[in-house]
Length: 484
Image (cartoon, rainbow, N blue to C red; front, side, top):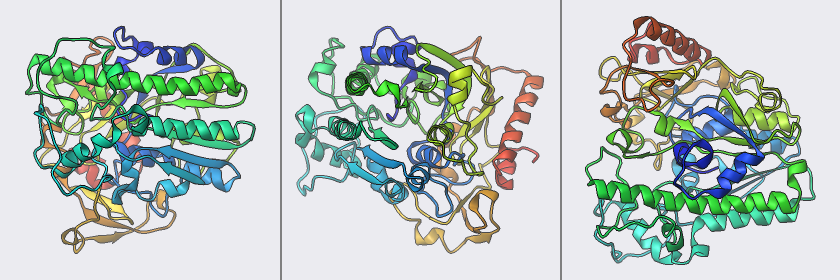
């Protein structure tokens, strides 16, 4: 599992200029899914879906596994499957993610990504003249403290994460019933890679240092934008190299005979498309929402084929539990992909995706409808027993005003806290364009929104039906100007 892996920059999805031969090789050995989408954005909301197999974003924002949640790795562990997490994704170890890694039998963590609070240094670090610098922002400062300790490739967290995964596989390949999650933060920003990956993309650039795009509209020059994209491409090629080591191991140890392989990501990343960088602050156009997915299932042995069915993160726990012969909890919404891989079985007619407090989006594969807030993006509430944000607990000022509410069906008879949410968690720019409807067949770049009232009504019906099936709180309909 990669973070911020862009589908549009992979050769199996039509890109002809990035150096990613192992992704091309991967597509030859697996089934490639053409209609995989995000569910809940961004990092930890997606990972909650990976554990629970149900949408996160309708009920809460960034946060930990809840006491009532099903956890796929923990369910496997309880059914005699050894589960292992090898990761450099430091958000697992902040307040808003600290309950995930303990669901695995064992885990390891490799330090240094982004602003990981790793190396202690009181003195201000040396920071070059950069595009879109962040001054003394703690994460920006910490990243420049960390970088001198990762000058060699082997010192970077991605190689260490893959090395740990390779070590686990080599020592346990002859054993049965194990699940390994190799998860790297790359190619998430900053796009920090070694020179030999950058050399794959020669270009004449003499401007300021730029490998960490800001979360805003593009203000940089065309030359800087092009350079930023190539920095991303270099890190993508690094990801390709280390993913190739897993393919080599699958070959060497004949793991293709009995081992499922899933290669995926949590979301994409804007690199200047629609005049945006990054994620979070804009409508969830395809550059972020439409994701790559490759699956090898040794039972059906389908390779070099493609599937058009709608899939997303909530399907992965269902797929893995079914593979190991473990019953799925009733609360899981996902669909096992084994039959789709083997026999082209259908999955679903439509799916939802979005941020908590952002537009709620629905697609049927052909059309995408983005439903923005009807007014000031209220009312909005968080439903949780674990009141934490990304990297801090809920502030004391947020907690005096909360209400104990009756259980949802998926909370297993547990009442939860209903806490006023933060509409500002998603920037107003995400709603500023209003409701958007696109035909992906005729307008794959989502440049020309449709004005088609009858089609919009059909997509609204799909959206409401999926919200109901997910027990969306009543105020979500009010916020979006919908009739429940």
